[in-house]
Amino acid sequence: MRKNSIIAWFFVYSVFIIPLLSAPGSEERPVHPNLNQELAVYNKVYVSGTVTDRTPRQSDGYERDKKLSAYGEMKLTDSFSVTASYGYIDHYSTTRKIWSGWDRWAVGAKYYVKTDFAAFGAGVQFFGPSVSQPREADINPDLFLIRAYFGVLKRFGAFSIQGTANFESETNSSGKETAEENFKRFLYSGLTLSYSLPSRTNLLLEFSHRTSIANTITPYSDYFVIAPGIQYPTNPNGYLTFSLMLQTRTDSNMDRGFKIGYLYFFGD
Image (cartoon, rainbow, N blue to C red):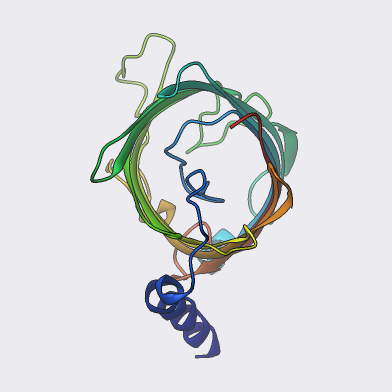
């Protein structure tokens, strides 16, 4: 009951109270989400650590992931940028294999345009194989991943709202699904509410949802996470970031956790 009250308080505070607070005198760069897909193009480096654990069902035991990630982005124009990321994962489980190693590498491209009404962003990311992850009955780490996304950003002075939709699919080197390979496909959706204080501290409330869109995937792969967060400025271009991930359902495979990182912008 107490946890539900805390979640409700964060929602009311972000949606109804934050927009009434005094706004900074000038509009700065669009707020960068801690958890969801960002839309605007940047020159930036984002180094973060994430810890999540899950207990979907008693028969599935307990699982925990610790992940360290580095993400870089470079603007080629005011509307177009390229991205790259890499990371390291430590995975513990009471029912599956325990493993540690390098995460999937990823490269991508983004496009961003502003209009008088709102700003719009779209992009694609290509993920390599998970070379460290062991192969199991329902996991094929040798497959690549392709993720395409689209979103809208609207700003009201110091308050902004960003919504995104992401489609992700496994694929092989030929890009074709065979009779022996059932590609897993997911639809991600994210909503980020943010407010920039006069001190340049950003307050965030993020909602992240994933649902499977293939019959071969267990419904326990789906999740819905609420993540209050903060971005605290350390210098004109750098921020310490933190988000707390709160579970909303006990039958999902990502129940709770937190993410902490350092976000640095170059020259914009």
